[in-house]
Length: 345
Ligand SMILES: [Zn+2]
Ligand SMILES: [Zn+2]
Image 1 (cartoon, rainbow, N blue to C red):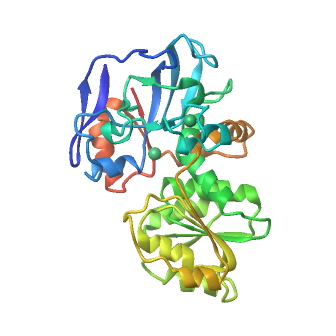
Image 2 (image 1 turned 90 degrees about the vertical axis):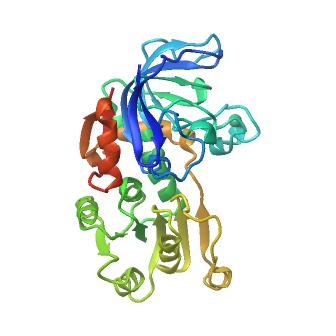
């Protein structure tokens, strides 16, 4: 079968590898019908994650269950499913408390040996371990493009907005208008903010975000924190959501909120240490929250919101390509020439 394989920095190629199969009683084999190219795939593509050479890529996908192990209870052959980008057991110390992203058996698809040695989803087939707690059924009548982001970027955007504690009437700033930032804007609207600002450096991204109801601020042209303060009577916003993952963006997210505000960080930090403004956070009584998405807790309600027409995540898809074109897809996504790419095997 065909799969997108990481060879070396900025080198992805479509290769023929043996078709995977069910190995453990809790596995499901899924025939992939649509796979996303995600911003976090670029950490591998740009050579920042060790141990991925020769491994399949991709972790955002929907498909049809082709085979199941003897202990899989929630799914049967032929079911249409969306997957979380990581697997969780459902019964460890963390899973029973609802913190699936802390599961002692977690592992992510398409991250090679670095994170669980699972297969990549930009592929014709993928084996899904711990299937009962990793997959969700797609409701009848929902298209693949509507469901796919529930397992990654939409869940992350919603998680970010929910943890920002947005109350009706609040002002909000979203830092970063990439795919996760756009999902955060869309999700933030569900909590009733009066205004949502969005900060980015790229005009085309800002225009897209503006079309979703956000107020654009180009950080290349103005000082983002000053612009937000000027627009909010000198105070800043009530809540900020950071969706970039560079320390400068986290700094902007901290500085643009007013006293008593909340900062919610979901971007993967590009440095493991940095200066944290402890005294400023204490003086201004800020709440700082950070983390990668607890996807399994959100897939079901998000599918219901999409089915009800309250969220339209598929609206951000800019490029529909074939799995065979994965090499080109990575090139244009890495060059920021595409908002969001989906691949069909
Ligand atoms: Zn991702
Ligand atoms: Zn667990």
